[in-house]
Length: 196
Image (cartoon, rainbow, N blue to C red; front, side, top):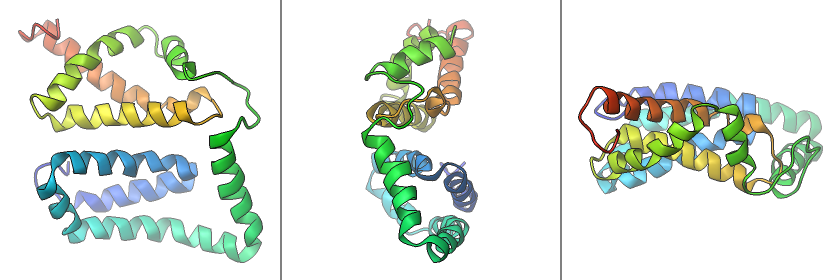
């Protein structure tokens, strides 16, 4: 919704990110990473327009207004113990070592997991990626680029993290489904040979 000229949606983005941080903590960080990469890929004009928008900064303020009170209360109540558990154990330790790992696996854990849990759509999704990449870069499709960024950032982030859980990559499913549906639609209805 932000793409043409609807900067007020930054306020809604701020609410969504604030709630995501309250629910999932540092895992919500993939959202700002995806958005930042998308904005940078759009070039200098988009970066200037975004950073110059009062709505963008309003969205940042909304996010902070939602997440800061809880963090401040935890700091007052528990001090260093809160930060040691919250950032030390829940974020850093999970990233760097196996934590109560019910699931374990190497770098191909999520590739194998998606084959099982995104079945039967895993292979059509995989085959849709080159067409989506073409759309994102040759045709400058902002939607394709954003969906590919979601897939890439989430998959890469949780492949890097040592603790493996199948539900970490659930945010991939909607993005993969939309990319695959678009390519399948164009293959059936349109005349796009690459999609076919």
